[in-house]
Every structure is written in structure tokens, then in C-alpha cells.
Amino acid sequence: MRFISFTVEQEERFGVWYEEESIVVDLYSYYRDKGVELPSLLSFIQEEDINIAEVRGVSEAYHLPMQDVDLQAPIPRPLKNIFCVGKNYRDHAIEMGSEKDIPEHPMIFTKAPTAVSAPEDVLSFSKDVSEALDYEGELAVVIGKRGKRISREQAMNYVFGYTIINDITARDLQKKHGQFFLGKSLDGSCPMGPAILHASKVSKPNDFNLVTLVNGEVRQNGHISDLIFNIPALIHVLSMGMTLEPGDIIATGTPSGVGKGFKPPKYLLNGDNVEVRIEGIGALRNEISIR
Image 1 (cartoon, rainbow, N blue to C red):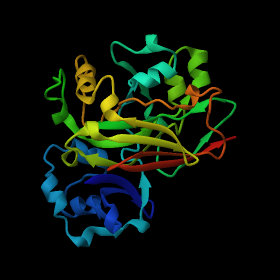
Image 2: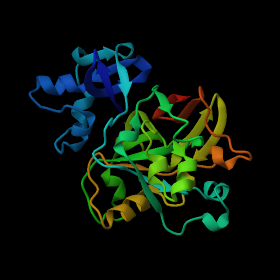
Image 3: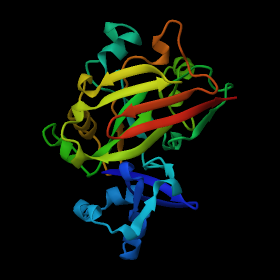
């Protein structure tokens, strides 16, 4: 079951996408007609009394042809910064420096909510701001339940589902300012989607494979089982001193093959097309515009 946010005639809605049938189930309208105000997918995730079995049984009266909707990021405006994990694949840590750069503990940084953009958006950046834009395909975890001091053993019970982000990064800003936030938070630098795959459809999250292509060329091909710090460990560490809430997003890290890792670097250019694929979730595609 893949949850999406979309617009129909400029009205924001959310629902379930059945790609094989090219059908979207309009859950926004379904709940509105029941007298339940759920204006967004985020509000749906935050609703404690939602019955997923009920969602599966929504009648055809609420079906829409996929061609009639415009996909948005599943959570277009997160309530918090997106939690990100640096150097969480051994080979990526090495390509960014050496074996000495492999972390002993999770490296956590964040991206601003205003960085989020939609699947298929043309992502516009100014060369006056950065001349070293890089791609980072990542699996992201969406939290579905409020919790603090969550044990590794219980961590997966707090997951609503999984999506894709491209953690676009201004490498020159990182170097110039000596920190991650500015270089990670440019407007449009966090395309997300195309959907959130519900946790009930994922028996083994470690089985995800991630592929990033630039203009059709495979640049990254990583397996989630290679994470240095796995999903339960990340949820545990993050929740030890802060409360995780429904709708929080954790980007789990990127595998080797980023632009900076090549010699010379292969940074993004005007007109490049970037696609990040994870089977089951879908493909996140965006064109890059640099002016």
C-alpha cells in the first residue's frame, strides 16, 4: 500500500496509489464525506484511530485515474527538520575521505522543511549560491507513533512507512561554512517521494536496494543491509534524548557513488536528470536547473 499526496484542480488531497491499475483512492474525500477532517497525509499519519484495513476497503466511488492527479511530495511541508545520517555506508565514508572517516556513532544533521520538493519538479538553483551541487539517493523512514527512549527491539513498531529522498548537497557551502546545514537546506534540495510504502507491506526493510541514475547512468547501487547503523539503531539513538513524533522523517544515509567521490568530481549540471529508485516505493525523478 503506497500512500501519496496529490493535487486535483489545485486542491490538495491524499490517498493510496495502485500503480498497476493506474488508480488513486481519494482518502481525503472519503474521510470528508464521513465527517472526519483529515486535510493531509501528515494529518492521516498523526491520527491514532486510523484503521488501515478500512482504507483497503474504500469503494470505487473514490477512485481517480492516475493521469488526473499531480503528485506532490508525500509530506510537502514537514513539521520539523528532516533528520539525516552522514557517512552511514562504509564505502561512502571512504570515498569522502578514508577509513578514518567511518563513524563510531551516527552522524546526525538536518535539512530544513522548506527544502522539500515534489517528484518530477524541476529543481532550480543559482550558480551564485553554489557551483558544486551533488546528489545523494537515500531511503527515508517515516515515523508513525510518538515515542521517546525507544529500544532497538521496539523501534520498528514506530515506523509508518518508507519513502525516497534525494539529499541534494552544495559541497562548496559545506566546505566554506564548516558545517552541513546551509549546504543541505537550499530550497528544492530535498525532493521526496513518489510515495510512502506502508510498513505492513515491508517484512524485511534490509532487503531494499537503492539505485541512483544521472542522465540514465548508474552512479549509486547500494543495499540497505550495508548500513553501518541500521534503522532500529537510528530510531533508538535519535529518541534517547528527544521525542519522535508521527510524520518525522529520518533519511538513513547514502551509498557510495556520489559526485564528489569521482576524480574529478561529477557534480550536477544544468539540465541533468536525476532518478533514485527503490523497488516497492518507486522512482523519484527530477530535472536540475542551474542559472
